[in-house]
Image (cartoon, rainbow, N blue to C red; front, side, top):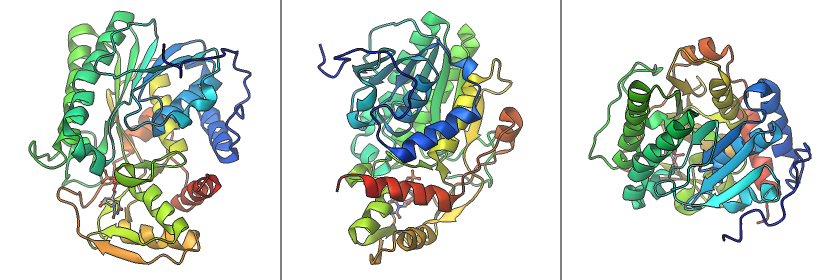
Length: 356
Ligand code: UDP
């Protein structure tokens, strides 16, 4: 038996501070819980693939606080056990270290959140086969498990399903512009195939699938180091250490950044709908920020002496990303609210509070 699995089961006390000892995360979890109707999740059995990753662990934390029973599935290839360490002794939480592609059990669940993936561009380009298969074989396994249970499915797709888009803001109806042999194809085409498979299960078996095209999200627990680092967490760590802040290209490329509370609230609102008139939804902020400005903002918030160093733009990097959020606002009756300054400040304070 895996030694990480539930050594001392106990009931969850309802105290979100339990073991987390982290004020910022607890406040953020409270904000997420306040934004959603708990009844959709109370008493529900939920499997979260990629549950030890950045967004997966936030979903586990939120749902445990809403009295769901969680199976957290993760092979720890990019997820980190520390993200869910505080939950391992909670009775309604079970961690299973397993690969989503070869997971052979069929536990009884009401919902499946499929987030298992390798989302960092430098990392997934080093592991293109595992990346493509997590979206293909892994999605098939999760859909098959859901079908056996007649469970509802949340598929974490990505803004990268649009590839290098030419329409801004980008609506869900845009088909995308993707090179199947490009440097990012294992992720982009992987996510697109995962979506196609979700639709196939829906059309053939009537499975209730919800596809979320998640735009760049950030916040506490986003990995910062080495190949796993995403732009905001990496810049924050560089600023805190006084290292050069590494801007790729001239930094004129843009992204829209959504703080983790907004991404998780929207995801759970989408999954909480009794019936959804839409299968696919953009989840993101309709604010566009360029990377050069982002570097300067983080440097200023951190009061850092770091210099900004310009490095070559990686092949296949995208120049713009901006979601059309009209469908999200209409379907959920909600829109993201946390401003970038606030989110950066919270993320920076969280990183600062970590051990060096
Ligand atoms: N980026 C950068 N420096 C870094 C890491 C990323 O300038 O050290 C840029 C990258 O070129 C991209 C943007 O920041 O245009 C977002 O990168 P990230 O890796 O977070 O994810 P992406 O949105 O490209 O999937």
